[in-house]
View 1 (cartoon, rainbow, N blue to C red):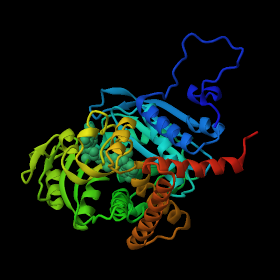
View 2 (cartoon, helix red, strand yellow; view 1 turned 90 degrees about the horizontal axis):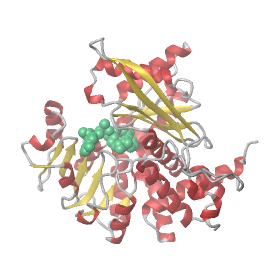
View 3 (cartoon, helix red, strand yellow; view 1 turned 90 degrees about the vertical axis):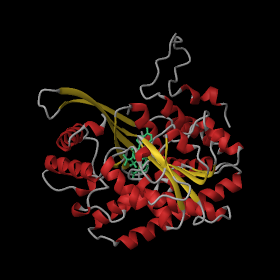
View 4 (cartoon, rainbow, N blue to C red; view 1 turned 120 degrees about the horizontal axis):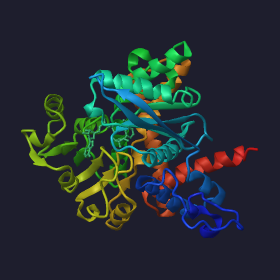
Length: 446
Ligand code: NAD
């Protein structure tokens, strides 16, 4: 392979004409943040392993389109008007419309959304879905919003990005801090502007307006399907496993429930405030009911010991499922983890340094771009059902999802074994390899 230093690959795209005067300080790219760098470092590792064409490698390191908007947002007291920042990034438009969730979080930034959009590209390609990756975000703490405020914010954000989304263009879905209600308001706002109902502009909608059965549970179901496959591969029994889940939202609560339904012992779960640990196993119905009543600090849950989110990650268990936020398993705690396997429900929970430590310790990691791809897969099913106006039963959705997850797991695992690389590198190689082929056959315009 060509020396990357001579191809500009490590220049973050800032290639200069050879005779141009050297700039004393190179301005950082707008999206160059730690999370973006993690996504690029992962890409670089896989690209090197697969001897990727440097022209494609360079192209994949930056988003094709990155939209930053700001808008006024009025709180319920009517007097407070604040300026809110929001984003929609489309990483790669080669494979079809772009697809990816919308996140409401007070720390969201362009780099985070760009990293998430890149991961969406790999994820869709691993699952053979006809989409490129995208992601959106609004920088606000959704927990501080009333339902009316949430609705106003969502409608204004949708209006601000209306020119770049659409059923054939870019299709949002729920992510951290957003849900079915938010998708319904997005669909309604888009449809009002167009003058007719456009259900295909978002996925993860309520069933009443064209949502799919099984979408709400899809990501958690995919996570557990991967955990099952990984256990089978390693000759272990999922049903005899103990499981720890960080995060008790759309992904974590479903993962915990399905694990428990399959006979596994869910020994600890947490939400943003903290977690509960019971080595004999938690009753997930009771935990759900408790959270509904008492909120997102599980340290007060009566049938378990209180643990912090950091302590939870280091509890002894067979399977650890981080399903909350990014940057949770780092060089600081990777050596202290006592799980036998990790299955990533969240996006980007593990840093590159932690990945290396876990690989040294022979702890397999089923990576986010494979393990949490169930959500986008059923989003694809929702889109297909909407286009055809022909809706499937929940059993059919779940059966098709599990079939696709199992075959994606097997094909990634096969690459990992053949190339003697981790599951993460193998998953990246599968996804990037497919995109490379598509880029080759499409050529360069003009
Ligand atoms: P959610 O908002 O429904 O739930 C998030 C959960 O994480 C909540 O229980 C919250 O209390 C907890 N949490 C928030 N901040 C935390 C912190 N600092 N420490 C510990 N816990 C914290 O979000 P979700 O949709 O379940 O998404 C969770 C993760 O899964 C995100 O990384 C998201 O990108 C990823 N993901 C979601 C989907 C999906 O379909 N929703 C699909 C793929 C990946």
